[in-house]
Image (cartoon, rainbow, N blue to C red; front, side, top):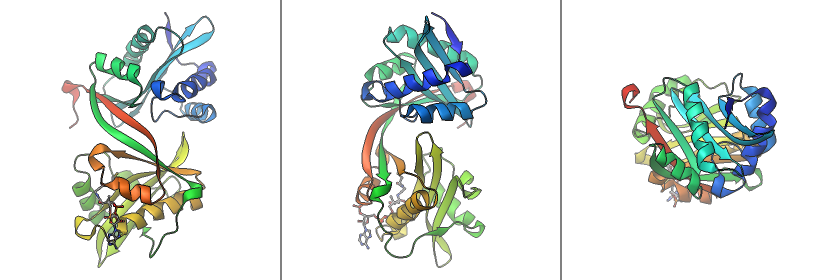
Length: 289
Ligand SMILES: CC(C)(COP(=O)(O)OP(=O)(O)OC[C@H]1O[C@@H](n2cnc3c(N)ncnc32)[C@H](O)[C@@H]1OP(=O)(O)O)[C@@H](O)C(=O)NCCC(=O)NCCS
């Protein structure tokens, strides 16, 4: 079996393979796209997409890829069609690891029903992490913001936003910094300020695969929770994404440990789309945290 780095001529076949595999929860790898044309466009945008492929004759039977962000590799796949899954997946994984050096760890996020993918990652020394729910708000279900909308972030709120973020997301590697320097086209941060104190924020961004807006971070100071700030922040961000940025829908991911936020999302028009499970493998010698 010969595994090769992806070539521009492979892109549309790879996009079709991913879309086909992701249409079935039992083979679905979350965050890797669902529509072939969007997957292909996202691959074409990258100067050197980190993907490896396997062909049997002229037919593409397998692909696996990785996006590197802050020294962590976020894996897509293994996507294998109609062949010996274990053998093809192992060959793809060996080839992919050789393409990338000096990471602090790998992560993958599979549909909870993708059991063959789960078995693959566990066999490769990954540990099973948290379950997470992906919610989506279609543009047609956007609700009005009752009361004062949140306002755009301005630099005098930076210290307050950082302090709130540290408290609310102490356990998470997600950084708020990129949103404070957002370009207002693809990233935006909204805040509530009460008597000069930042009491809540929401961070939102625009994605192209899938083409949707996303709510990336949302937090309200513990002293003012259950007063509707969370809902207004969420809806302010959803209005920006749908009305100003023209997104057809807004997605967000809730980890199990943040289960209390689910009621708020459901009552704000979001519906559950997928349940996923994270898998991670750290490199002890190269650890960041
Ligand atoms: C999740 C979070 C942002 C919610 O903020 P919040 O300001 O309390 O949100 P709201 O006040 O709009 O809604 C919270 C609840 O209070 C209720 N509520 C809202 N206004 C109310 C009012 N005037 N009187 C009484 N209850 C009210 C809402 O019905 C809601 O109930 P529900 O959760 O059963 O739907 C906040 O708890 C938080 O920062 N948590 C830590 C970070 C986190 O988990 N973020 C989400 C990541 S996925």
